[in-house]
Length: 140
Image (cartoon, rainbow, N blue to C red; front, side, top):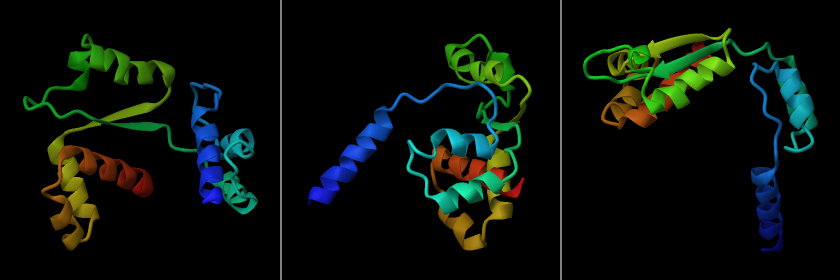
């Protein structure tokens, strides 16, 4: 039980640590060097992360509007202003790709095994979009 309390304290420290704020994309070696000690990243894993190429500067935006409208048509709404627009301002050289529910479901159906798609098909939007983004990053 003492070990559990120690682990809990370590996680509390990580959650409350003041991490530096940056607006540009990090190459994996920058992330590793900057956070290796504070996040207790194992040396072997840190070496693996450093060997990876930089992330693609692409943001996958999910906008499910029943009218099929583009997210940028809502630029004056607080949700878009403080969400996607803020993200775009912080990452001006990044590419933004917008998807609707049909595109998400088509992509999932194409990239998942039939049994996995059947399990995901009745799921709410959020689990589908999370899985969609993970698959997009993995395959592209």
